[in-house]
Every structure is written in structure tokens, then in C-alpha cells.
Image (cartoon, rainbow, N blue to C red):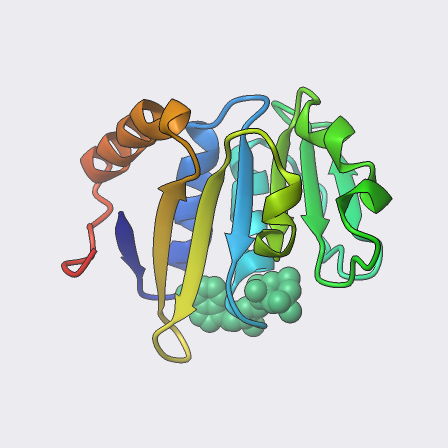
Length: 162
Ligand SMILES: Nc1ncnc2c1ncn2[C@@H]1O[C@H](COP(=O)(O)OP(=O)(O)OP(=O)(O)O)[C@@H](O)[C@H]1O
Ligand SMILES: [Mg+2]
């Protein structure tokens, strides 16, 4: 399903609301061009988990772990990952009891053998984004539907073309 986010505040609020519907073990691949808003999204998501620490882009560190919120948050950016997913010890995180948000996650899709959600951010203009929420596998279809239904009930507007 697609959602229209008119500005940065909406992106953060949407991510916050999605975090409230998420559970340990959930994996979100964040897809979108440079500056699409993947890190911005993560800031809102972290807020939803009651993480008060400042979220910094893990562009060079590849991963940052936040342990003091409702659930652990593993924030990754695999844009510069050269050796493939094993380099990162990715499996440990994917199977851990935290939530994984993986910027540029599409680059390591083939290394992920558990079901995941995918969030794609597309720039509409300087301020607005189109967010597409999807899941990788049938196992998550029901959960995805529940999430979408709840977001719609909370007032998030489905994009007409999505
Ligand atoms: N609706 C919006 N949602 C998210 N970011 C927005 C929005 N409108 C404008 N922006 C701006 O776009 C930029 C997004 O930067 P951000 O670092 O989140 O992107 P990114 O996808 O993580 O990029 P990178 O691939 O370099 O990691 C910020 O400067 C933010 O202020
Ligand atoms: Mg980023």
C-alpha cells in the first residue's frame, strides 16, 4: 500500500506510528535514493520505541544499536558494505530480539532468508514523499494487512494510485 507524506514531520510521525505496531524480530528494508528520507524515517521510528538518544546515520559504522527503548533497535546502512552480509554478522541481528531497520537493504535482499517488510521512499518534490509498504513473503501478508488497516484507521491516507 502507498501513503503520501507531505513533509518531513509526516514521515517521522508515520514511522513513529509504525513502530508502535512493530514487534521484536521485525525486519524493515528501507529503500530509496540518496536523501529520500531513510535516516529521517528511522528517527521517527526510534521515537516510537521511546529511544531518546540521537539517531545518527550509520553510513560509515554500518550499524548502530540502541538498547534503551521498548525493544532494541538495530539501525544499519549497507550502502558501503563490500563483503556481503556475512561481513556485518547480519544473521545475529536478523535473528536477535530487536527490530532491524536496514538502509539500502535491497542490496542484501538475497542474503536475507527470513521474511521482511520493505519500505520504499520516493521523492515527489523537495518536501513530499511517496511511501510504499510491502512484505517479502506470504507469512507476513496477514500482519501487513493488520498494520495497514490500523494506519488507515489512525487517519493515514492511502495514496490513490497505490
Ligand atoms: N517528506 C520528507 N520525508 C523525509 N525527508 C524529507 C522530507 N522532505 C524533505 N526531507 C529532507 O530530505 C532529507 C532526507 O535525508 P535522509 O538523510 O533522511 O535521507 P537518506 O535516505 O537516509 O539518505 P542516504 O541514502 O544518504 O542515507 C533531509 O534533509 C530531510 O530534511
Ligand atoms: Mg541515511
